[in-house]
Amino acid sequence: MSNTNTIPAGKQRTRDFLLDLLTVSSGAIDAISFLALGKVFSAFMTGNIAFLGLRLAGASAPETIAILSSMVAFALGVFISVKIVGPSKDGAIWTQRVTISLAVSLIPHAFFQIVWFASGGQPSFDTSCVLLALWAFPMGMQSAAIRSLHVDGVFTTAATATIIFLVGDLASWSSTVAERRRLAHVLLSLFIGATAGGSLLVHTPIYAPLLPFILTIGAVLTAATAMRETPVTELAKVADT
Image 1 (tube, rainbow, N blue to C red):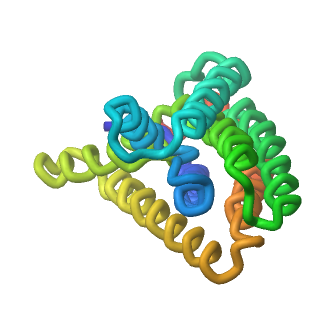
Image 2 (image 1 turned 180 degrees about the vertical axis):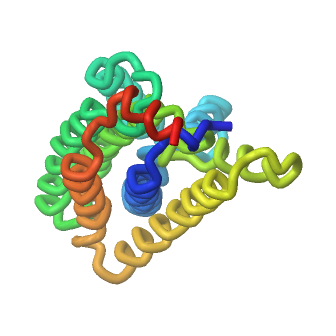
């Protein structure tokens, strides 16, 4: 269980809002990826690994090159993000390097929009592989950046750990109300993102990818203005009050 007593309430709420915002974005990305880019995920690597196994077994599954395009780009995104974020800072709620990593992830996001609009929202198979890589890369960056914050059960790009933490707490009742609310909000955000992304793709497909792009821009701008690093000494003072 994370120690929330050392986190200023205002910054904790802002951080949790950012986690929700990024989770909505990744939910929309995976929904759009799966429906429009050959049934392959850009963030949910567990699904892609399962697809790869099915493919190697000779069962019906997405094309291997599409799966690998996503997985390799995701891994590269994780690698780059870890290099940017660097070692975790004890007691840090949110660091400037996390914001920088998310800002850098907007570059492939932007290229995705360009390629998507150039294809008229109906990419060929080869273009779909490029688009998968362009989205998986920032999803890897986002995953690694958020992981560096060590918020229990929250990854923003996957729900398995969140469900484990939330249901596990229901069994042991070991977390605080704020932690339970955070986990529930992340699951709800992923659902909202997938629903919104899928709905936009059905009704206005050409504009659907703009949703996660705009949400990520909003997260970066909010983090840059509202989540300046809180020194450990300040956290200690809060803990003593």
